[in-house]
Figure 1 (cartoon, rainbow, N blue to C red):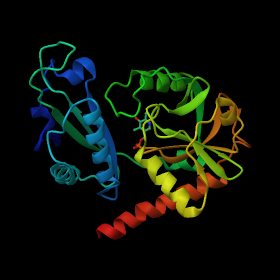
Figure 2 (figure 1 turned 90 degrees about the horizontal axis):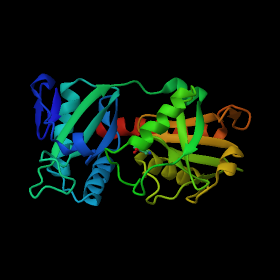
Figure 3 (figure 1 turned 30 degrees about the horizontal axis):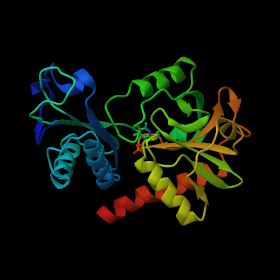
Length: 282
Ligand SMILES: *Cc1c(COP(=O)(O)O)cnc(C)c1O
């Protein structure tokens, strides 16, 4: 079953109009929310961000956050998801193809839930990355369906048999193609400030909260490609990648090529947050 507008439907019953603006322009916004042991992680935060993304492109959500939450719970249950995620997108809807907004906007929502395992071996062993120029637009803070810059970045990583691309804009490290990026130097964390050059990840916010709680100093300040290459640890985070160490960049090892201490601490505390979620809900 998938969610279409506010109804659960069989996927075979659903038709997407060729004049949907999501299809023609990538005119819409989306979210990915993790499900651990049958329960959503950070749903409220994701839906608040979805609402913000929509507002920033002058769209309004067709349903309240409360209604969305309730429907998404049903969606996860209907598909019997224990470990997985939900993908949710809202487009500006169907209209004759003109660039400007249609006079009557009818936002169109689709969501589906999938089983997906946690990336445990990558979290344990670390991943490899390349650096590549950040060719994206100047509103990376919006989780928009327009992902060509991200798609090309990720493909470039795959072409060089790496896991992720780390974007560089004017010598500054912004983020990964679908992840936020952190460096550790002398036990302190640096990550790009949450402005229009990055997507402020929900996982990023959890990581920063954990760091604060653990007494690790965080600098939400820009850092350069040289500082990235010279870091003691490099870490990425996202809903699907959780907190994962980067052990090599552009073929050069990060430190000794082993996941570092700060990464391990963050991972441990992140696991506690997941376990906590179960306790609160049950
Ligand atoms: C979604 C996304 C992230 C990570 O955000 P989470 O909320 O942690 O999943 C980071 N960067 C980009 C470009 C993204 O699209």
